[in-house]
Length: 180
Ligand SMILES: CC(C)(COP(=O)(O)OP(=O)(O)OC[C@H]1O[C@@H](n2cnc3c(N)ncnc32)[C@H](O)[C@@H]1OP(=O)(O)O)[C@@H](O)C(=O)NCCC(=O)NCCS
Image 1: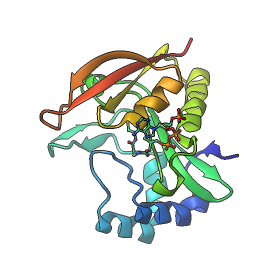
Image 2 (image 1 turned 90 degrees about the vertical axis):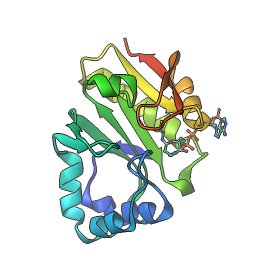
Image 3 (image 1 turned 135 degrees about the horizontal axis):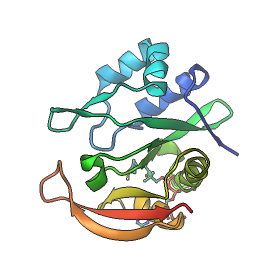
């Protein structure tokens, strides 16, 4: 049975395999070969960055934005990396309308086996125990029914449809999950 663990050097070989397989840390921006090569070359730097992220982020429109505090876990079986899930401790205006509290991704070879559903359930337990949040917001593209299903299977309640801030004409769905 896989478990949620903090990112660690022990899983970096499998993590880099996942990147080559098509796993991406950001659903808006696929990994570049240059970034994958840098992560493979400097795994210790990468682990430090994931465990203690910078406080700014380059937004999809290339402007510099605030990166809110975030905690990432990896879904690990043995020493194999299967996916990741992260929680933002609070939202700013941009994340309130798009992005939400929790994001996740499963490596392509491990999809369709219930991993995202289990990762999100584990993350909700973590949030209940560690963060003072009454409810979390999650957003999903209309063209991502698998992710919408993962949210609904974890008690997600549809809130509204919202225009995508970065992709013109695209629409997303916003959900709540009550934690208390
Ligand atoms: C979305 C994603 C996380 C799903 O991961 P996963 O481990 O395959 O998800 P699960 O196996 O837990 O569950 C997927 C559910 O969606 C369903 N599903 C899959 N494709 C579907 C589709 N095209 N239409 C409707 N439902 C679909 C599955 O049947 C399953 O539901 P079920 O258990 O009731 O049968 C994965 O595809 C991924 O990493 N995508 C890229 C990153 C991403 O989109 N992240 C989410 C951003 S909001």
